Length: 466
Ligand code: ADP
Ligand code: F6P
Image (cartoon, rainbow, N blue to C red):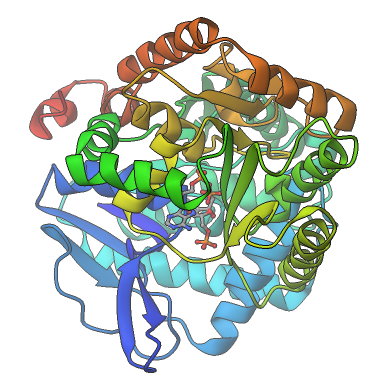
């Protein structure tokens, strides 16, 4: 059983006002959904995206949907408030100021309790329950109190901050204790596990190493398990004849430029969209990049739209795209093609295959699965990946064009380097990145996490994870 804030489907409003079910945005669903659908029967406990009573949902690809209802004030205070205006900015190096409100904490406790009760109700005796991410940090502890028979895992998809930042949290002890209700607490990077161990000692006085923490009469294991993607799925898409044709069509529609540059992000201030636009605009201004030769496509799907920092970001990005197009575009030749629509997987695969340079420049990111999707889609071993040192993925791909997105001059230089790289260099880099990804795909992630969760090996065997 997976317990995550969101179900893999999201209740969106269709253009005619009707309710429409779409794949949920974000990396968590991209990682877990393909995994679960191969290992049915499985249950996913989560929120369906709307407010009000829980809708009855049919199974999705054989996975049972167990909906947790959220009312308007739950969404406001738990999801938009404590999760995305307190924890999210704090865990991402406080690149935006975290906001603290006592009523948000009350909502966080209430909603975590609701998720724990829903999981307790739906779990078979002795089941394995895998709780996901920063929205639900209290669930492992609450669930263990109701159902001590369960084996409980917790995985944090986002960075886990150093003590200097985490210590800001008014309810830091409760958050740590909640996570320690799990048998295994997983992070993306070893540094995050180290931060957690240090905090367990500093805040709770527990004996901790970077692998184990003693809590009462239990030992909680901790460790790094870098999340990944279903490489085979993306490769299959990227080789489909209609996708290959579509990729060629995209380039034609863009005016057959010499270089196509692509970015695909949720509209989030952690993704470094503004820094990227600034670098690109300066390269246009100095003539290092010319609109006719080079085309930039920025896909930025709106996210967390009622949170103030996200509204401000969207306005700033749209103003800047407008300014750049006004200043450097020509009739029929914009400098930046800016798209805010969600795309299906085949269209994303076509975009990845069409593009020469994929720019992934977050200021901080737990992993960044877009970078991995791009590598998976390049079955032709071509294309360049410009990748921020502050994305978890950077540790796995030293062959990418690594950048510090805070260093504008460095960003411009590295982008030019990627634009001017010779095909043989690009092929060597991409081949190495694809080998790394093939060995460390989503199956490998699940296998290593679940083996650590159930050291007997029975679980991995039962789920036939290859
Ligand atoms: P995060 O989890 O912060 O959103 P990731 O890069 O890890 O960041 O994951 C983003 C996921 O969302 C990827 O699987 C990507 O393909 C998907 N995605 C991003 N933009 C779109 C879009 N416009 N349409 C469809 N899927 C998108
Ligand atoms: O990766 C962090 C995360 O919050 C995931 O939980 C989720 O997949 C993604 O970002 C999208 O965010 P949201 O669920 O707020 O739309």
